[in-house]
Length: 169
Image (cartoon, rainbow, N blue to C red; front, side):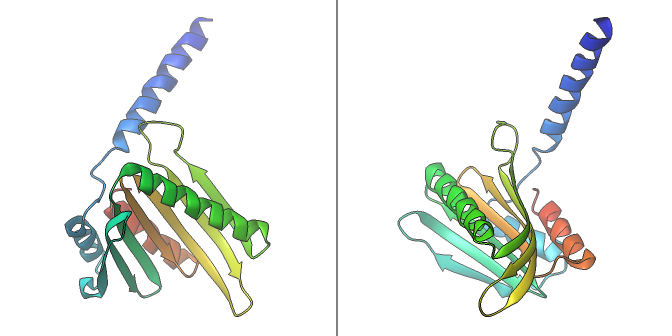
C-alpha cells in the first residue's frame, strides 16, 4: 500500500508539472501570429486579414508552401467553443461518410489546464481530388487556431509541429 501512495503522489506531481509546462504563452493576436510565422521563416506578407461578423472580431489566415494557418478571434468564448465543436462534428462526418481515411483525435476538453485540441492525420478523398492532410485545431478561450499541411509526409509533419510550437500550442 505504501508503494501505491508514493506512486500516486509522483504521478499527480508529474501531471501537475506537465499541465503547467503546457501553459506557456499561446498566441492570441495578430502580432503574435505574425511573429510565430516569421520565426519559422515564412513570408508574413502572405497573412490575410478579414473583418468579423456577428460572432467573429477578426481573423487572420496564411498559406505558403503547403502550410496553412489561421487565427480566429471570436467576440466571446461561447462562440469560439461552438465553432470548435462544429469543426469537429464536420470532420467526424467526413470520416463517417468514408471520405477520410486516417485518424481524428479530440483531446484536452476534460481538464481545465489543457488546451482543447483536434489532431487530423490522413487522406481525404472527394469527387474531384484526393489529398493528404496533417494538422491541428486549438481552442484557447475566445480564439481558435489552426495549423495544417496538405501532406502528411515527414517534412510536412515537422513543419506543422514547428509552427505549432512557435505559436505556443
